[in-house]
Image (cartoon, rainbow, N blue to C red; front, side, top):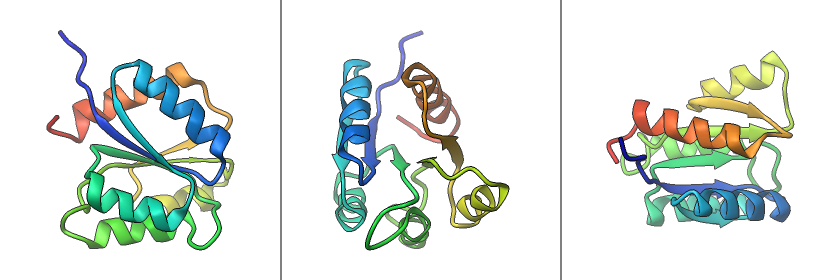
Length: 129
């Protein structure tokens, strides 16, 4: 069976993280757009209409919970799966992530190959790519 390809948005204020994910996921055949600003990430989600979003929690201006809340409020973006990719790891952080509408919670540092498995799981479980 051929692997599905996705439009993926990565929002993280650490350019090194977005560069790594953009390169790795693009090499796997996905279309990837990265933003290092929370505000620009939210705007890009509205215009790019990704199949999924990788979202950091700790960012200036707006945190990931706020971005996720905004995405889930809007009809055009409410069904986009949000995968939190963060250094925060307490049960409280995870609970806030799920309450804000997040679908998965991945702790940094991460293994790129594991993220690719998660992309495939999300594509099979959540999207109609």
